[in-house]
Length: 532
Image 1 (cartoon, rainbow, N blue to C red):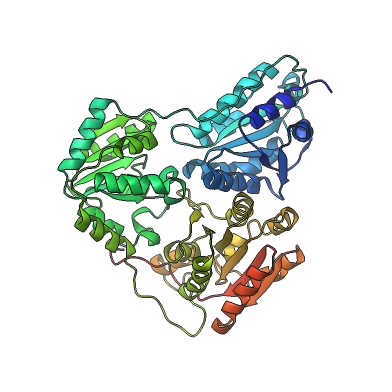
Image 2 (tube, rainbow, N blue to C red):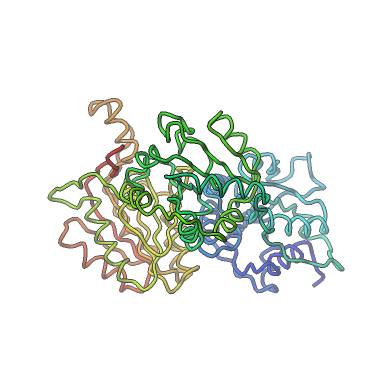
């Protein structure tokens, strides 16, 4: 068969080390499926386009590669768009490939004709619709590089049907990869080091791309080298992230805050002086001018230094010289504050903390582990009370529903790890059919559903803001998610009393299959530190 545009695309992906694509089939992308056979790229096909992107996002976070999602034209592309927004906020390097109507039918009312680039533009770092096979080869290479460089994030390519099938003989493919990040100039780096050396209580904030899972060793080296308290922030609850306890109180004591890619936005109360370190100067290091401009608007005169540089490269540069003052007392104070938790509830039934503790015992016993935390209130309980070798959460977007697809990708990315996905019953309903995908793929994980029969995050807002007599639209049923999962080929467990919890979790782990443990819990608000 003569080489086609689809072959050029897939060869470019293969040259970059891509070996798995998450996809849902459709008319316009069949040439890409065909090309994957010759390139040795596996297609992990799913039950919903949104799930493709969530899988690609988790894959990217856990492997360090660009995660690739492939969907069909207009409706398939539109179904994927919500998860693309989540990937952008979580700074995950994802390439979304979408089928598209033929170029030669533009403006004529083609089947599933849509200006996908116009729709994608606000959601991605870059979007393109290559108009020739040569342009497709260059666009694919550039897309992989853009997704992984600077602040990582999703990139979109619309694949016109006639470009995928056009002849492409003689074209040479080349791999696309992340470009080396640019550190600050020597003078700027010296200035930053001097400020860190002079500070008594410095804090370094990082965003999702430099969280513990994706940059753990670098963050430990950074903390040891600078003596600063290094704090990754990736939750939409920001200063009220239950996993970070009384973070707000600790930051109020800081006398220098350095942001390495952490956006100065709603998660930091926009840097408001009455909320974050009164009188404290900020240094903001970012590879995107828009983020530096936002920091200037929100911080005003408190922005002491803005550096147009790559945060990861800057972190590496700061680790090369160790400052003399390790500031152990200050770092201990921050560690105590971020570990603070409000008193845990008690009750005759299964409380969220009881469930999380039972899961954590099994995580701690595993040689390798991954935790997926997804959802409103129960997702926050899981973030606060479970920890593992690697973690994926729903990120600053505040979107929910990605937990099951992310668990599938986690099990494939780290097949030797014990994978737990903790989610609420609202979250579980988004992509429950992906249990069938998991069974088909042989992806082993345990999905633990904290079932309080309510959209509890919104329920808690109604209770707080409007009162118990003004509750509406948040109730859910006692649906048997475990039976539905079992019908899709997974292992199912249903737990209603504390004494049945441990045995159910052990059976799920021993089943050798993807498992759903549906646990009836008390619907309690998420934990918070004393400062909340």
